[in-house]
Image 1 (cartoon, rainbow, N blue to C red):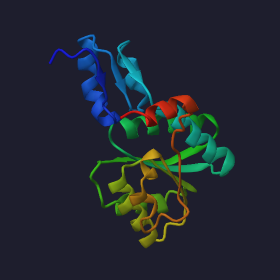
Image 2: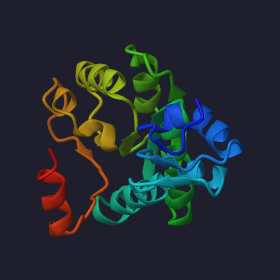
Image 3: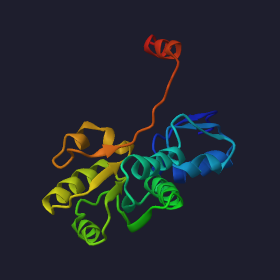
Length: 194
């Protein structure tokens, strides 16, 4: 359409296939997407949301240092966002001396995670790192409770919606989310826009 600039996409799973097109056409693109590799696509791609290189690293450090967990199970959604978080988390957790005793990706629409939960129960994991989308999270948290998996659970920024944290089984679940510190004058300018 011969546009001069693109604002978006707003998620990594859409950004992965779309951004090479923008880069190849030299169209500056500002994304609200966190998969670490997206800005490496080229010098026309910029982000306004923290990279999961930070969120995955922070999750590993928090689980290892603050929760004192050493054996992690990882269940992640199989797309650019989930894979990016998983990769950074696993690398950092292992570097710190942790062990990943179970690691599996699930499809975005998966609502039956009983097989994965059963495998986690036998893996001796003491924490579940769970970067999945709300549909996966809501179903998985309920099934974790139903199958009596007594384990610490740490999700990612997709858990920040009320539909996840108010769902059955979400009590006690922790999640990470990027914090953006915009200057107060910038916030006021945005609020004053018509």
